[in-house]
Length: 412
Image 1 (cartoon, rainbow, N blue to C red):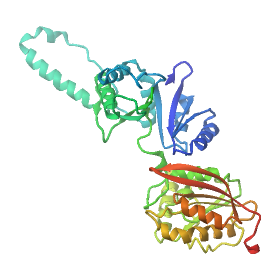
Image 2 (cartoon, rainbow, N blue to C red):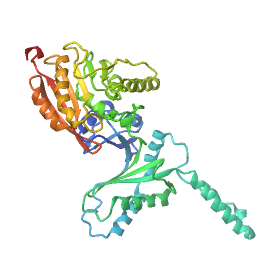
Image 3 (cartoon, helix red, strand yellow):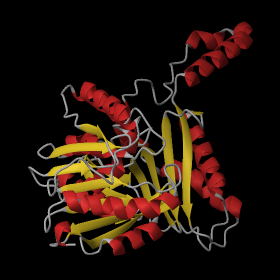
């Protein structure tokens, strides 16, 4: 929704479920606003001129501008039949002020084509030419078809939560999309749409928006992917939990594609970042991703990347302030059987290179059972400050915030 007098707009950013608080904190810090947190998303109102800044939020996956919000649409436990409810979705299209939302969408996507048909003035001489009426009709139809082809393609995506609805998500999207087609004459294209209209239904609440991102922002800084490349948005949230200070030395001992390293050098430039991995292809992949970022940003970044054994790091004792890493889940990378040995050894080695009292570690893993036992084994060196549970592609993963105890490994 856009406030025309103050020129503000309501945006919704989708985030990885479990990281809503981090996303809200970033939003407040960078946009000076107070977002409203919901599961897997947040709503925030900002000036229209700040939308470009919102598009650069590191913790956000997708962004859309809200054009209509209905708190009580009366569709849950409704006595109306399905056809009547679906007709109400179609009628809602004509009640929306689309102009401001489409203007923001155009600015974000740099779309240059027309959004509406422009009616041409009728030629009065054509009315007197009765003999040519058939020919004029065919020419008119052809011209109209050509006009339609210049309009954008669109699709409606419906996300529905609530079990007491008389309709399906596809039926709601079809009814709403049909009304949009009648209003704007946009062409339907489900696979390569220019405009994506989002219909979010939560019980009786409706939120209608226009997507400002065609692809997930979670992949924004990665060009060369491996089998388990971490999303940039998740990497940023892990680093945010580490409370990195200027001058800190930050290491990712299992870097994969380098997502954590890249987010670190971009967002915490006053700290020193380096990484490594035991896989022979990992270092080349990280270098390739860093090269792409350097070309985009037109500046050089540190390239301290190593091939090493995580359980036997070539680092001096107590030299790394923060460890941030994505441990193998034992699915696409490694195995659950190997994790029983890897996790305690890796955590012990991280405790060696992190200084007592001040060292921190942020560990992401889906293998909760192995992690629990490993933490018990290294409890004399690592204390669990907090645990966050996040949703990664349908898998529940844990983010463990660990603090280094006062005890040295030499005392063991």
